Image 1 (spheres, one colour):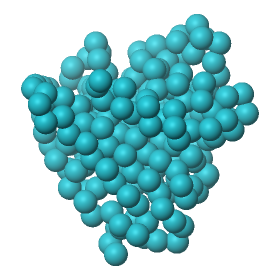
Image 2 (cartoon, helix red, strand yellow):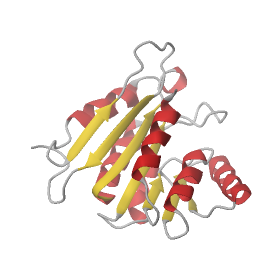
Image 3 (cartoon, rainbow, N blue to C red):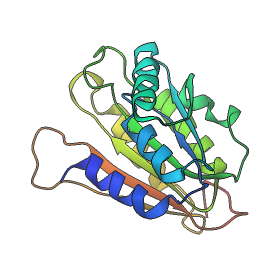
Image 4 (cartoon, helix red, strand yellow):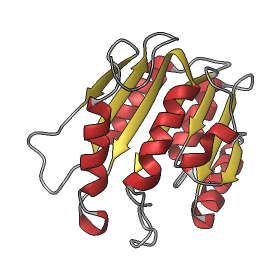
Length: 191
């Protein structure tokens, strides 16, 4: 069992045919492909990544599996360009760097925190955001610490946040985090 297993298990339980989903950090396309299968032909999946190699890998995987999604070369911080507020059922993030990619290219709090907030505004009530938080090595701990601190400030009447930790795993295992949007009409920050 690893972070990807936990995230994918939740997605299988949450995402239904016809869903609107965003893979905010497409990477190799595994989350995008799963979202496409779950949302089905009546659903909509948008996948974003800032790296041309990630966009190419995602498109290749989808083509090989006969799946369809809008795969866009763009930052996760710009996801509000691709959906209206309150219309998205599920958003997936993998924060950190592309496995096997350039270790000097990784997400940072400067774009990740605004992306999380943009995503929360896009979620419909009952929608879920799944985060896999990779940290350590080249990208260090700054983004991890900033995200965890930020999530603690979310309005608890509007969102439920569950952050999981692998207590007996070494070497900075990625953390699975889930955010459910409880109701409309509440501010993201504050009480």
